[in-house]
Amino acid sequence: MRGGSLRNPIEIQRRVQVGVTRLNAPNYVWQTWREPICEVEVRRGREHFDPETKQRYSEEVWRFRARYEEVEGVDATMRVVHNGMNFDIKALLPDGQRQRDCIIECTVQDAVVGSVPLSIAIVSAIPDGSVGVAYAGFTVSAAGGTAPYVFAEESGALPQGLMLNTSTGAVSGTPLAAGVTSGITIQVSDADGTIAVLPDFSITVA
Image (cartoon, rainbow, N blue to C red; front, side, top):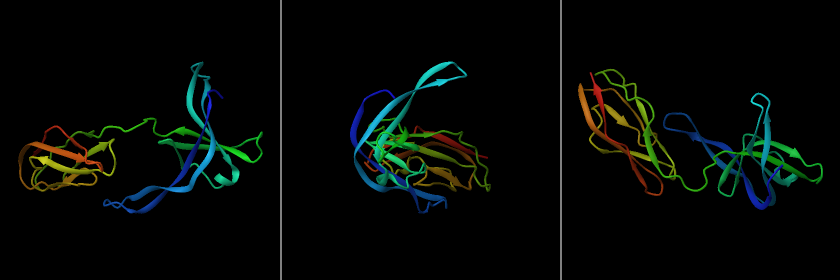
């Protein structure tokens, strides 16, 4: 084990289903499982050896020290929140030196520290459509900023019969008229009111 140690509180969260989304998929949220545990020891940085490549590398492994009774029941489906960062739980290890202590071994879930700018993109090809045939669809995705996101058509309009889901960014429907619709622009706004705009694009309906 390399690196120094810090004394900071952590919070342990578990994922809980809260109803379903508009697409009838399970809707999960993270809820506090245990109030912040005070005065836990944090260590990070461990060197590994890869026998195949014969190389040594360092993995971002964090170790949080706590009392057994404070973390009884914790499992790998939960996560640790510490200093604005999220950690996946790898293992719960007994501490041989401090008999009442144990170590929660974690890896960083999201290594980005601080806020990430809001961005918008279409990561798949935009399919053509056919009149009277259910459109194959595509999804406008957002990242960064502060969720939840709200999608909207900024200028132009989708072909007649197609709709934009303002919550998921999915474009679907059944085209009603043939032609090329150009100048379509979609934007996303986050909980802080920040807006990101997608460059213009077009959809062809045969």
